[in-house]
Length: 386
Image (cartoon, rainbow, N blue to C red; front, side):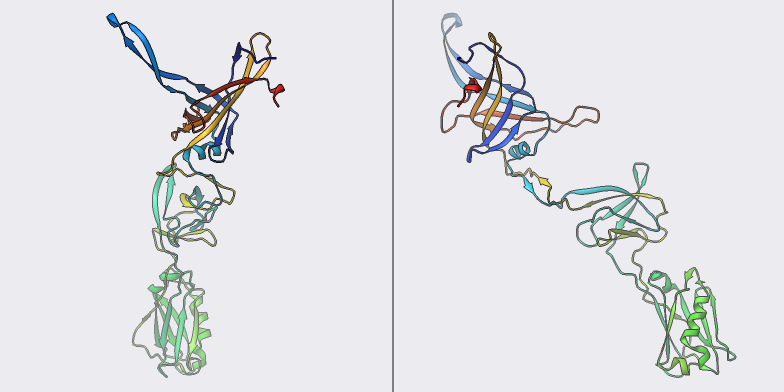
């Protein structure tokens, strides 16, 4: 049976897009909402008496096509951008997350990337949905304990080294030790303000060992709000057997204590994903917002939109159904474009209460190297096709 001369068509066409170079199928759009094909041409006329048209001449035949697909696909995005789809890890993606602070710390859910000490850059506390206080990232430093060295009168090598804990950091630098000689043979360790006074037993060095002095300092618990309960003392030279009198003329300061972070700043440790704030800067339960680069896994698809790369020309075949108006028999209908220019333009329109985003693909039929034919419209019985 011959294909119908009178037929009806309804419904959007499916669209296949092929590489001109390889002939391979690059995209197939089968959820098109609309497929608009427009045949146009310019016509000019010779004029006669009174401006009447005498004869007409046609030129500039065009077939612009607009396809509205129900959703984006990676393939059509790649075609419109003129780029290949890249499958693999991507470190340009960003994580935005709200975290809760507990004990001056929090933890990111992913590993923040970047130069060490600059992975996050800034963190803000939140007041509702508004930014409140800003904290800047400091280069990660290791907390260092403060130390204090005092000499006995017996020899310059008979020393007592007292060390704070690393957790206290720079706070211990505010303390000092005043080494004196007691009026009797009893060791006495006291504190006033930020000064720890060690009065050495004046006869028996065994009463002044580092172990005994350490226990006495730790028993003070806090000195000027600094926790000394874990301070340690180490004897040098013959301190434990010879120290019965001070070799100092005044109080000696603790030095060298370093905080891991200072007020108004934070540090980030990528190995643990840990964020650390200066003690007391942020109350427990405070919500913070952080943003950082992290790694999309090896299955990620990346489509780039470069300034100097554009969509190319493709072969396009659009397929639909034609119904014989007399017999109601269905026939295959295809619009074949040997060469089409694919528009680089696209719009992604998203609305909180609107419809899902659709893809508008605009094309223009071109004359190919094979033929001057812009489009073939073929209606055939697929059952009879070979």
